[in-house]
Amino acid sequence: MPYISFESGALTSRHSSSRLQSKNCRIRHRRQINRRNKTQLQAMSKIEKLRLCDWMLVFATTFILASSIQLEATDSRSIVWALIHMIIVSLFFANVVWHLYLHFGWKLWVQRFRKQKSVVTRCLAIFALLTLISALVALFHWIGTYTHSPIGGIHGKIGFVFIALAIGHTVKRIKFFKRKAYP
Figure (cartoon, rainbow, N blue to C red):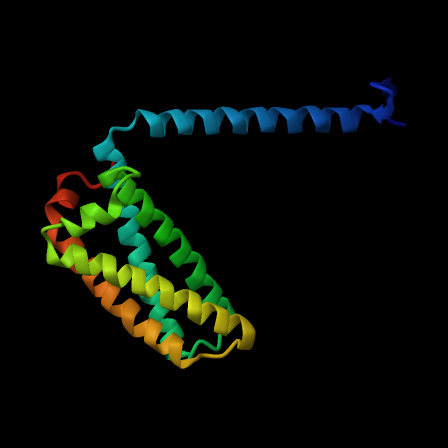
């Protein structure tokens, strides 16, 4: 028969209180790890954050290209692949925002893109916007019908041009990646 005690107005057994204590320990440990990771990210220099961000973009671009080819091969019939593609792309665009923030800060993005000397970077921004807009239109159609639409095909072509420009943008800056493999 388990030991029963009366703690904080509730009848509890020794086993449940030990589980509660171990759960509290796990929560405290997770909080300590989160604080440590947060301070490590804050302690990173801007160039280290940019390097981390860029490597994440490289990996996300690879996965987006693979999932795009998979969707094209199956005519977007697989709901699982479509959802995987949407999740990866959402993370990718969040990472793009972080990349732009590291370069330009929060202010004056449009003006800085207008003054951008690199034609590839300007085209990359335009095609990113077109890809995002066509993705939203295709998403609303897909949610309503779960079928591949002509706008989805247009989105795929625009997205492919965007990925090609992103690869060109990365190749132009390959020396940045060769300096140090990981932050």
